[in-house]
Length: 187
Length: 187
DNA sequence: AAGGGATGTTGACATTGTTCACTTCACTCT
DNA sequence: AGAGTGAAGTGAACAATGTCAACATCCCTT
Image (cartoon, rainbow over all chains, first blue to last red; front, top):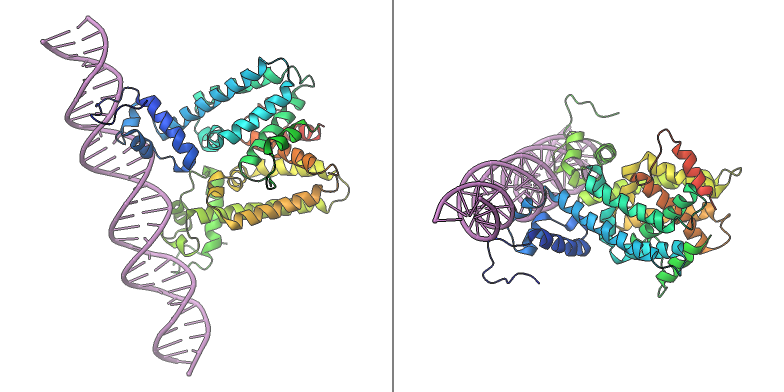
């Protein structure tokens, strides 16, 4: 999949995507703080300044990463919407948390305060699209209106964050997914 | 309260606390990413290397900051416990969210993934103490056991995080505290 | 075939966290 | 009182980082 290392051409050919892929790997391995622009360039075998042809700054690279995260997240949610046989609300919650646990650092990046600080319209749009899908998927069950919907969302999101940060004590050998389902279905 | 700027003495006298105070100000103004060790030193009027007599690293300074955050948080929760007349569960939730909204960057720092990454026992202990208090305060109402308690905690924490990140759309002129109360009391 | 715009490289700069050797000063111990 | 020891601050330096400007290379259009 990667270009042959021998006789590496002057132009990479698809550097933007290669950078994103490498960055995603480093992100999940090292966390956002450990994701240096130079590291990404090094991983792809390119000079430290090369990424600037495709991203305005390190922040822009992170933004692009977060955007792809929201897109993958949105697609997961859409998958639920098409399935008629299950409880959408509960399935949404379990999928939401599972996504967070499967991609911890990406999930954290998607909600990173540092990224939200410098207004990045692309990120905001991707996030809004995800929330729209969320509302669409769960809208059928949530007839009680905004407050109930926000309460459900907060519960699911909080569960994801607390689990991610290791704040919820998990007993040895405990089935996390089962616990998540219990918590989500606890009314 | 600060030492007189004229004829500043070679030894500061109470540098550790002065650094923490200055760091807290910068943190709330600039966010964690904008909190440089040299900035803190500059704000206190001391050389860039001086903080190292009191903190092993920038991370240690951040840890100390987060610890004080958990202590203030814990004290707030204890205040609720002593008040017999109100619904502890609801009051806890509202206070929890209010603390987050009043000290956004400090709250974020307390749950910062970067800080949790390098195992800081002091932080973990402060956090555990806070959670113990939390359980103690709400324990009387939560007779339904662990799952219900976690569900309530997740809802409150998620609400705080989502509000902090501006993810929950607030309508113009809307009373946030009232909305929070509604969401928390929505069963 | 030519040349122009996109893509990469090289070298440099400011800034940051951190360390080391050094100074200053407040104490204790005789 | 006076010596000197250790805690607390200084200053210069280092490696690493994000970023930029000037230059090189190559693909694509005309």
